[in-house]
Length: 201
Image 1 (cartoon, rainbow, N blue to C red):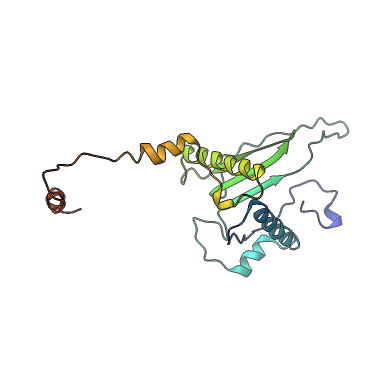
Image 2 (image 1 turned 30 degrees about the vertical axis):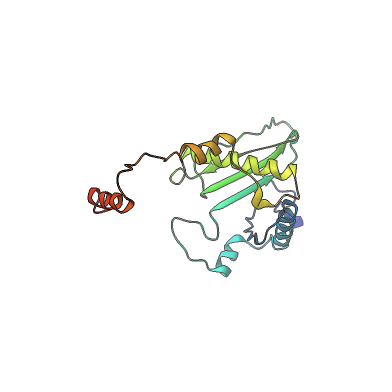
């Protein structure tokens, strides 16, 4: 990736250009239709992959804020590099996992395929998200991906992301608001009583 010019093909280094993808998610799309739309958008963007991201920002001229990167706050990276053993003369080379302790975006999702499985990490801005929130988001993503693989003709809007535990929490536990009220009073009297108890509410 990032080596579309022949003179840079033999070079070692990080040749990556960010592609900002604007997705049209309108309509009642099935999983297959959504994936076709994503594919079409990604391939169209690849035709302009040599245009530097900074130039895109200059052309679009989005409102600038110091707290946000221009154009988007969420980034996705799919690494489909084949894992190969490096063999260099008189050198021992091995890959090192990079620990991410600072993120550039609100959410950074990186996925890759390893031994027939999709693995990855979701890094996030700790000023915006709690660990428990991000853990839930990862479970939602897992549920969506599993549903997409199971039935490509399912409408995306009908994919269920809640686990049975979370559904019970949201629909039953947090909704257990039933309470007894004095049956000797009429509704308007209960209202007046509440107004007296909390006049500034």
